[in-house]
Image (cartoon, rainbow, N blue to C red):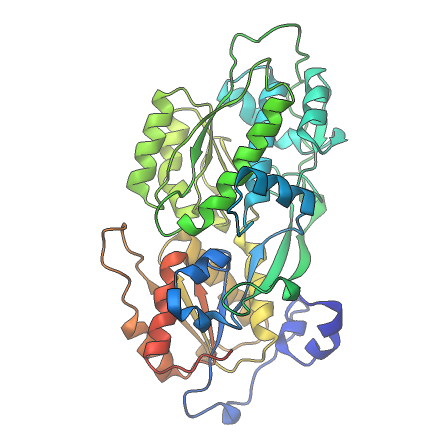
Length: 447
């Protein structure tokens, strides 16, 4: 539950403090406002970034006071400094640690497998994070792996427990973020752990290979990027790209994998299935072994059949759709981001701490948006929020950059007539139009 020590006592009277205990907190309908109240805004990992504020241009003040959650661990300053050395213009760090760890784990798995064969790499990935000799730095871990030692990698995002059998983190860290004066107010950020360490896999991977002298015939390892350089999720690209670039730099500085430098083939997912499929097709032709991406869960769902058919590994640093845990992947899909079954509870808690009477949950119409929306709705219901106090709305995101901008006028009017005093917006850069439409419809946004 995302509650700082100083606010815990005050929160006991609010629904949020009762959420994880499963207690109800219904409101007296007679107390509900009969006129449109002021509305508190909430967001999720797709829009709680400084880059999101830039989408509003001169209207960025609309975000002041907006709160939300995102998978985020407290990042060491040394790591941030190394990221800024890669990209001096970096203003956000969302999923940078997850991107870094995805690349490092892929490299370590190939070294332990003694091969760049994707199937062999896939069989080592879960084991890289469990039941071995603990190591944290790429150079240290690679040295152990070259000597045929089983390792247990603990990186920047993966610092409490390893992967589950499904190839995703058993535990996660979440942050509550708050927009201040047109940017995130770091002084108000709170962190909390989630998940269960006992869910980490206990299975033993295939025996690791000790590297002899010289290069291995199957080297070099080739990683292909499938990150959102363009499209609605482009606001998340800089930290994702910086994390991957930093990991590649440090792996190669430590001697690379199987005696050669790891190669990177850049690629855009466009936050668009068609663009992503073209990139995957090119990666297959270019001999890529592991694809790092996609950025959005829906894009990974779209390309996964093509990746699996080609026998490659798809390793995402930012997919959170809980449904991907059980997707048919032949053991070739992995992620360093935690599933939204954990974030749903954290988000519901943040909303309920403010004691809303009527809540509108607005989501982009895809597996990420609708999946997280349903997780939040279920947690609100679990806390005793009646169904008539929660309104669900979705919108079709623009197909591509050439499509007309999102028009949420009708949805904003519906929210106003409903009398919502809390609005959660689950989306990417395009969701700025939702908040603009609310303001333009006369909804009073509370700061």
